[in-house]
Length: 85
Length: 151
Image (cartoon, rainbow over the protein chains, first blue to last red):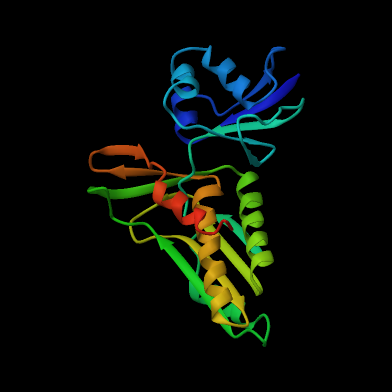
């Protein structure tokens, strides 16, 4: 299935990516497995998704936990803990 | 109920007045303004850049205000949050809450800020004399939000 993935703040800067259309491999079904998959790209990807960085996720504009399921057409976003206000 | 994300500055006085006059049975208007500090963790700040997630930000703020409305007997609420590059003493955020009495307005205003700090997708980057860096989330902000969770 195909999804859109967005990156913000430190992630966007380190990965040098703000958005991508992604065809998910069979074994990716939720946020946790998507993060593991992204980490296999190595370099900054591994650092961001398999290292000590705290990463938050949203699906279709709602904050989710790492066990949240992903459906075809979803907009998934990854970002650091928020610091507004 | 209004939520705005904008690069332009806001006129807090005018916003408070507008809120005050929406309903003649309004007896209390509580407001909070957050502004850019010139010092953070000992670093001299020259500028602050705020990034956000267009689309999600508005929804997150609306959901926070909606929760406040369900929890307290308030009349109306306004949240204005700026994005882009700001300088020390520039205004960042405005929250205005109106109601019949001060207790509910104060509580709802504080609740909205505590949730905004931990759930609305904004990120700050500080420019200092020593270079630039992303601001780290504070555990004290999480603790502030936890206070509102009913045990």
